[in-house]
Amino acid sequence: MDPVLAPGQFRKATATASLTGTGFIGHVDPNMPNQVAAQWSIDEVEGTLDDETGGIEVRIEVTVSANAQGSSASVQALGIQVTTLARV
Image 1: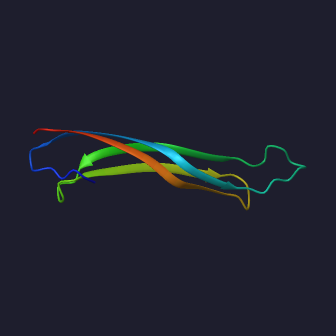
Image 2: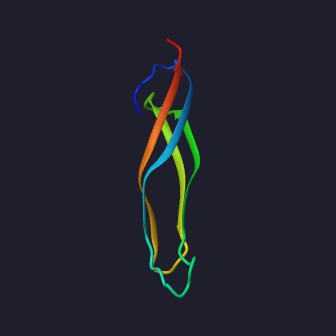
């Protein structure tokens, strides 16, 4: 991820992420209320310097689950913001 920094310039990176697109397909049985649920969470977001490229590397851990047979949950898009502190 840009910018590419020269050795010694990188000081710190702060990264945030948000779920900007999610999907859910579930089978609902009217005889069994509250049987279908899905859950999405962002568990960890980290911005660090990639020593090989000099760029900023962003790692995001996301958990997605659906609890009913024949159901599926997905993440279709993530929003990411990275702020980099560098010596000029």
